[in-house]
Length: 353
Ligand code: P6P
Image (tube, rainbow, N blue to C red; front, side, top):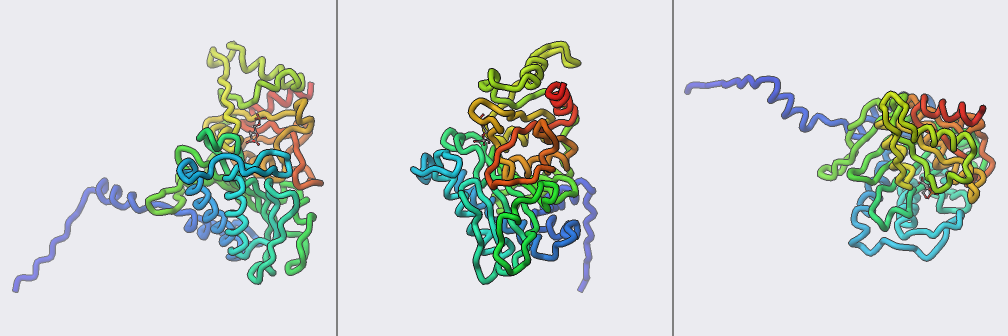
């Protein structure tokens, strides 16, 4: 019998195309590839990042079906900030707590939605090494009007002895001690962006395979941008340096021969993400209503400051680097000026003159 062997040589463009279709790096693969970046980490840290990814996918599902599942609207309760909790705030908070509890790598959580620190007591978390500070769903006022919202998290190694009961000292570490920080943006697509101190990488959720896939490797924020994110309704009570900077942004005598554009969504994760990709500055200074600024240090400013610095940007309170502040309250607020380094530098110059 004739034994015929046919070898088909396809031009690269076909094989690469066919290969690239499946040649994605998932978040799980990426975490494993990079796990030696965290000196203290063995597999626990990788598993903790995996657990956060699972929570993010679950929240994304809830956010995307909110209008249909009658989970929009107010939960009828207030959080520690005195803000009305949305049903999705509570759902997202519970989802993250459940995922991290079952994952067993976290001994305590600080959440925007909880007055006190949450002590994770379970047989699998007795030897947990990490604590997590989080805003489970930032930008809640935008939920019911279908505008992008986000989840923000930061991870510290506990300072109390492993096996003992964690306490607030595990959280009152300066942001420069953070092991990792990240956010999830629930927008036109769901993206998870995080850093472990070795650059910033972005992953887009592919719902067809239920995986976050590396889509934005080694993210860097441009040194300059053409947009500023600031709630100009607060301009009358703004520091003079902010007033001068906003006024400068609105002048046309720039290389672009046009004023900068104001881009303010009211969802810090969405404003931050756009500025990270395109360049820009996010400004939340002291206001008459919030004399220390509105954004919370532990689970909004610190994580974003870590990310923006790792991407080549700057995050400052006007009195120094955000990441150098030693917290003294889980929910303390700080002013924040963060984004493209040349834009923040110019604003800080005006604040300090
Ligand atoms: P304002 C959302 O409530 C949030 O914490 C951030 O996501 C957002 O940037 C800011 O508050 C908006 O605050 O006072 O401008 O509505």
